[in-house]
Length: 441
Image (tube, rainbow, N blue to C red; front, side, top):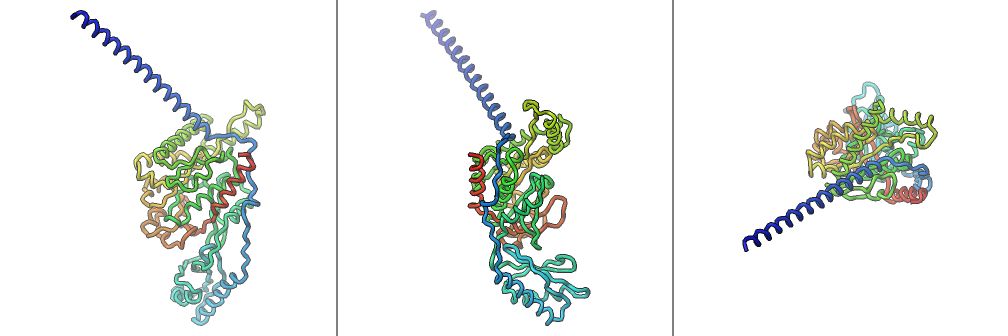
């Protein structure tokens, strides 16, 4: 009986050992298969950063946008009459100055006053209440100085005429620039169109309250690049923690994958972009070049001399990586996010990866962000403290509202006051539909 029990126990132990090693073998195979799948997926994602679309067509802006030429004579006469009334006031007060011009933007108008030598500026600013009464407004903001020998003051428009996207984009086209990341960003206080080159500013940080114009400005950037470049030249990667309108672009070849809103997936996507940066660094360094521009020029020269398709080399396209609202990710995993931001911000531009960060909460603007992302835009914020958090100066709290913004360029001290273009969701959808139609999507 004892021998039978011993033999039975031995058989059971052997069976359990065999079963254990069999399960272990299956688990190891499962783990290896999973690693292979992850590596395959990762490689496919990385390869997706570069795409070749030989027959890709860029839509013609004509027909997409309605050109609204505002020639409202009565409306313009209001500003002219205001200038005449202001000059009568100056004459009555025996001041040596003259209101010589006005510059109407969408939400604000700037009046320009020429000041003669010897005239005290204080004597002009003391007339603030009387000027407000003439213009029928409860607020004016003096700009001292404004231009050569002039001062100015800003008034919020009673009738708001948006700065149109199509007008700023047509100005960009008129410059015939070959810079792939040059974008229109609006009109300054004297009505001059302003452009911004992401190649020069490297990266961009955008801040401002909810409803101040940040999301519309991102649409302006995206549509500007969609209407002037192909996926062979520029592609986008998007994180949008709010899950707002950026998903509209998901089906376009210009976008790498879908816009991500889940926080954990957002961190995975950031790491994939960082892997792409390291891959590009190796390619450019191995070719003995300093940056993407030098590398692409050499590849173009090579391809001209090598006509066979199998001998040609791939151009590295530019990647615009948009993260909106990045303060959500900062609060979720601050240390990891800041580490990723440093790599993206410092290494990305050299290899053609440019980051656009947008946030509604100044908490996101830590010192590490300010150091690595030097070009900043602020729309209206609630307080001087919030303005300082975004720009480093206390000005953005006095902005008038949607589209009114300050641009502080890299290596500059004073910001530029600009009114951003307005592009509607209907116009965005028209851009997307036109791209799909002509490219048979």
